[in-house]
Image 1 (cartoon, rainbow, N blue to C red):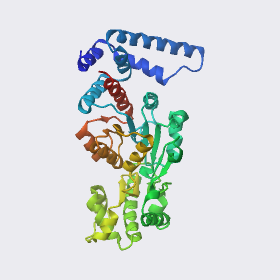
Image 2 (cartoon, rainbow, N blue to C red; image 1 turned 60 degrees about the vertical axis):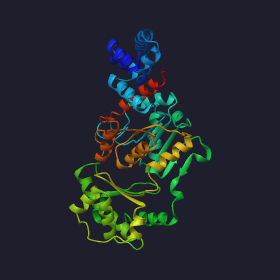
Image 3 (cartoon, one colour; image 1 turned 90 degrees about the vertical axis):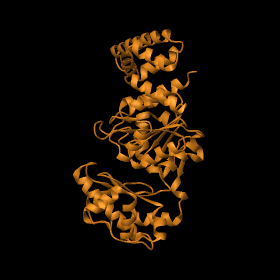
Image 4 (tube, helix red, strand yellow; image 1 turned 180 degrees about the vertical axis):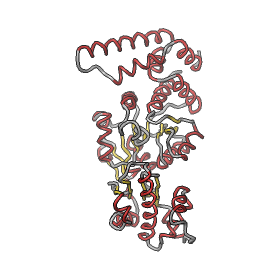
Length: 404
């Protein structure tokens, strides 16, 4: 019996939905507290084992199929099998954005859902390395990740954090390689310019930007964040103004350049920035000298509606961070699941596609360009707060890949 026929039989003949409910109860709500709770948990475990045993007895590879049915829906299992047919590889590392991917401020009080944490722990215990890839500071992300996943996992030597969108990589347990500050390798002229802009960005800001924005505490990237709820009308308004100010400040700080030239350059390279300028002060009619253009092509100005206006370096992006993390983790032939929602995540997805190094998944509220990429590749789009569905799919994929 081939794998497709076996999966059809598995989900047609057995109540996999109820089996997964028992598995989730056993995983997410372990036995704690009173004797009554312990007895109830034991009843769940006994029923779970009974249902799994029925599957074990029905298939030559029953243990594998029992595990798949207990952890993946019919759709997730068949998606996994389709991916296996396309790539003939199991996923061997997870590369995961945090905000609006693993967690969402919209419906989970900005916490990673318990089911997602449980599945990450389960996959990691099975040997899967985890790379958290975020724009946040190391201190911030390390704190809530350790709280959610536990100190043992974080210090397992199979866990890494790419922080501040690629400025640094933290991989506990790897000696001198534990913390890599990638911006140390940048040209001193570039670093000096960033230091100047960071020192000037708030003191010289227009009144509304100065009053209603704060500077995110990164070690390198200059990021202006709103003092309003992310995505609100007031946040959109002040970040639009902050973007224009940041472009003009860059023009003033970059020797031989002007604010008008900087506006022209980034308007040509990013339609969203062009739209902000067209609705605001306009796109100047200015020529950009080749030497200025060459220097600007090393610098990234990022715009995230109602969330951030940011200046960074193309030499320090999430791709550079992920490559450094994989190097420290000694993963020579990665085939990753890359999950994210923003343009910075898109670069990692495009890198994975170009290098045959993985597949991409995104929430349905991701940036349009991210969704375009995901839909053009493997159509792995999930609901808000639904990252667990992609992890269940990976769980099934890796077990199916282990079958002859």
